[in-house]
Image (cartoon, rainbow, N blue to C red; front, side, top):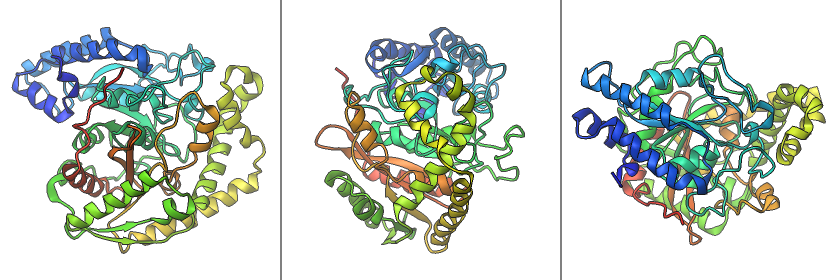
Length: 465
């Protein structure tokens, strides 16, 4: 029972289906792990062991009766506390929504419930998915499982911390400017921002209507594909979801390898536009060399400077976020953290014509990336430009957060996945990201799986003091 918390979803599912592992036993092991570690990590806003054990017993009964089993049956998961679950508050890590009781489940909550998953609780985030790690809120900020003095990335901070520490094998986050991929890179796990329209956002507190995504976070590529299988699909309550999307089994081509795949490397993002630190730069370049060694054709490509993408994302996000927060911002400014108030403020000064021009620019930038996919199967580049900084240095956090290349694929809506490469000399994770054409998450997973097999990171385990 001591090692159950490091089981992958696939491993645990096989043992559960074969009868060698009870969902109740598995859940109890993760409850014990959480009781041991969460006082140090603050990954949970609301830990729900009673609900988890009830779900586990139902899963066990379903297995005994061989009823509608899926790979997620009996698998514990957590939800960023921006995703609705009936019976529990959705706070968005904010005083403003501290008593917010949803009347229905989010679409992704229902999908995981129907798959037989086990809800372990609601996870911490940066307030409303836009603030930074803050100490002036009702809940403490989550911490990095590789070093609790450092932040775990955000805004899906609790999701990254919980999965990276072995408290959970699976969690959902949201991604508006990189908020699934940032904690994935910071905590050494896999984080996928699927194609815009692949996963419903119904029942998720919005930040930016046209940039928000819901994404799976796991310790292995295969597990991430399994989790995306469980949550993807059209939802009539979310008009942004693609009605005619074909839903593949995202695990089907994992073993296909990368031989012959053409991968475009956007190196200027992290060597010229924003200079990554030496270790991060080397990690990305080494990942490109690994793909070459495995038979892929990796060629350097050039697109618009990274600042064009990030500025476009910022203008759209700030305008759309302020449209959501306008009334609260005017009447309850003191109830936001200082970090969130500061992050929302630019929206007050952006004119309508700026927003329209940003959307026009967005169309041009999106076409640039689409044109690259005429010649390449995938694109790879940086996720973060450096490892996670200390959590108690707000000026450093504010300086390092924009040092990333994730917003590119929020602007364009293409799927993008963060993949760990190893540890820096400071003991914190390094990583990169791979993007693909619309609705081709399968090829991203195929490449990510090949890299993971050549350079496994999930066998490294945190040692939280």
